[in-house]
Length: 565
Image (cartoon, rainbow, N blue to C red):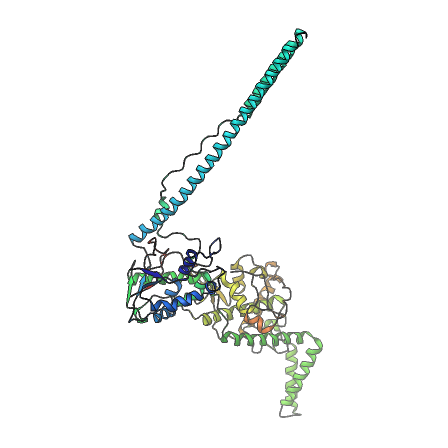
């Protein structure tokens, strides 16, 4: 019997057939969810869709719901099934995945051939109209030339009449005048010939019948100007896409092109590949990240304060005296000569500590190496930037895995790093800020905490999620000393050349980190910005009415659920 399509696309087609005026270049959006821009409130705000969804289950008809994203999402499938009770409808899912059937291929090629024939007929009409215009122009030109020739003959007759009247003139003058007249006539004839242009070669005639090329014959799906599903909608749903099952409430599931096992495998492979190249647009930082980010900001401020106090002679002396006083108060046995001598010896040793000989990775107290000097006393802009960047990447990679919670997508690649970095830290990211022309050069700078997996290209955090911030600082100091040794030996390539960013405006928005801080912070790098598809083809499960045409299709997708009375 008649099958009625329930979709936004069918609403748009119905509106156009009813006389509604839509955009000249189409409605935009996607085939799955076209943008309705008719200027009619009940159409544009999708009120008509709500009414149809409410009325359809009460009508004694057969329906097909060819919504690609919705039919691949379990929650939306269940929502559709609830509208059509099993007592009144047979709820059937038709899955179209993989290599299409021969009938489908033949049908698609028939549609392609019809489209090509229609285009050819239009071209033939245009060519015929152009030929008529050219013929009319040539006829006008011929008539103009004939008029010029007639005018020339009249001028010649007038000249001959004058010649007869001037019999008393000398023969030489008559001869000259005759020659002049002949010259005028000859000149007029030559002008007429000069205006005549050689005929242009005729254009090759267009064939009457269109034919598909070998490449077109190999195609199994038509190319559409609009995507089947909007990229943003697909990105938000990748983690929820799945095959329909009878447990959801279907009375029957038909795998029309490939068997269930092969169809499931194809969908799985497509999803894995798609997740590698699609950003999680709606990803938001979770509580784990927020807690550690706040802790890191507090720790960074304490370390920067400690460095500033050590570099200030007055504050350093005051701090040392306060430390001595506190240590003295803790002594239980005051006035003990032996203890006094011991303290004096300790103070002398403290003053003679060789900081450069200490191993940054094993020192006990990073805030005091024995003489009041912190381990990071010699940190410059580049060192603080490198420390902040390493910790930010560490937090980002672990937070991404937790917040997205998708086993198929534990991380992301180089091309998506700027997007997620901005989402979490409210700062743009660019490797040029670090003086790097290639991403591999940047990875070398952070190789102690991040690597790139072979094959997938995903970024991988090398330290466990509970790694202490001191561990990062110790490694940065170790790297600083190594660079200093190389520069002392004359190796200028060891020097870091980071770009100092312009101060960010207060209240910067865009990611959780920046919203919490309300502006720029010292020691955190701000670089140049970076930016970061549905898949093509077929869904359906039945023929469209009036034209018996399949919906456009693609390998690796599930078709629409059908409901039959």
